[in-house]
Length: 302
Image 1 (cartoon, helix red, strand yellow):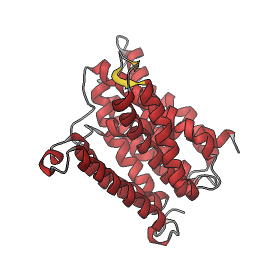
Image 2 (cartoon, rainbow, N blue to C red):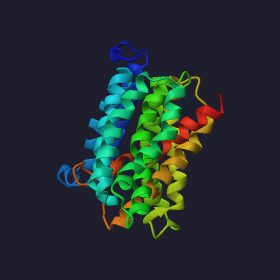
Image 3 (cartoon, rainbow, N blue to C red):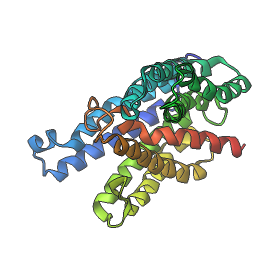
């Protein structure tokens, strides 16, 4: 459905109660860590993240429940901002950047209405389109590097975020699965952070991200299972048991992938506008890998 009334969904009350419970319990946990001293809490990074999440979660939920067009508009907005950050990290040429910006804005909207066979053909041809700026500029010196950075950026943002719309269209997906995936990704990241802080000893990838540990990976799995368990009833046709390792793997993969981009660019964060996180890529890195993995899982388990 291109447009829908978010208040008409029967699972809106359980969704609201779940989010309210999570936000309240997490705030209580934060208060306990600072022993009720509000001044200490207001200056902490974790509280900044909590305040950011209290905006992100309702915004994402309303977009998902409002139909494919609002969801596509959200995906387009995320894609445009993500491309801006990626272009800085990857040091893209102006022509490559504008190409990715155009695709980030247009591809999610195209996914609302175009038939799947035509979209599949488009995905085959898009890498050719990504080669045009370097080709037309006859950039012999930097052409191969430009092709790689632009081609990866094409998959990383416009294509991956467009899968929000395709998952919304999928008969086994829909709004319920998107909401469950969104919560599972968020709690997977929280689980990794918590387990890593409490039990982390062995580093996972010290050259990419020294703070990531194998204990954090187990936290990823636990958080993904909790998120899908809390909202999995909203997506009864989805292979939830298989989605747990897929979300956990995608969260770790996406986190390390963005760490690689930042390390290569000698940057701490992809940007600085999102309180508690840095930039959009710092917050959405896990989702950008979870989306294609989840879409692939739905395709092979039909």
